[in-house]
Image (cartoon, rainbow, N blue to C red):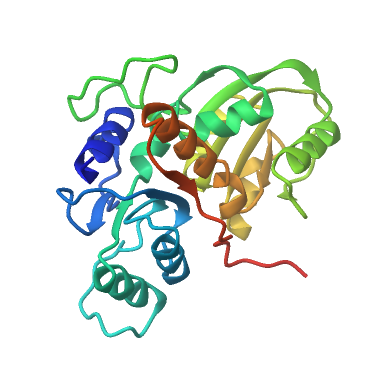
Amino acid sequence: MQIASILSYLESIAPPAYQENYDNAGLLTGNKDWECSGVLVTLDATEAVVQEALSRKCNLIVAHHPIIFGGLKKITGRNYVEKTVIAAIKKDIAIYAIHTNLDNVLAGVNGRMASQLGLINCRPLQPREDPYDRVPLPGPYPGVGAGLIGELPDPLGEKEFLAKIKDVFRLELIRHTPLTGRLVKKCALCGGAGSFLISNALQSEVNFFITSDVKYHEFFDANDRLVIADIGHFESEQFTVDLLFEVLQEKFRNFAVLKSDIKTNPVNYY
């Protein structure tokens, strides 16, 4: 089977047209016409993951984050991006990124986060009603947009909900704004860096907004109207690997689809 067949299926789920203008999702190294020996799924394509793919006889890496993001002017091996690209090209490893296009469909990154928390009645936090003259994807989670709003089947106290978040995402800590003393019924979330959606969360009158990479002054925007919970970038997107693995394994049952054993999170806690 050619790599093109695998990419075509992924793009039927999360079309590249749904990625943000600043993004660089798609095939970054390699050739779609190559015969695929196996797929390795990861959150980040790093040099170590390329070596892992080689050792596990996979010539296609499907990553969430694009290893080439802002462009390359030189490829001399001076940083981890260049080292990864050099390793992939030398070893004939194709790297494919499925990034904000997977963020922007409800069955994607945010939908998996919501399902882990048991949220129901999910919909986009920042709906895109066809801003690019594109038809929303059909399926169990219709609609395209950034972030997600959902509801808890039964309201929880704020401390109880924080404990649930910590348990579900296996967190060492949560950075959050002061608690408001209200029950949590309506929740918004965004995997990865989602502070650009704080205003949408406020307008939607949610009780909690779960995301990552929130800056110091952005926490003030909660203004005692909701709780902003920053759980970490890697931590918020960790279930994306399981999502991609399950999607590919279900479609290509008799083909080698593997999950990377390498934890690529560069952030440690002491």
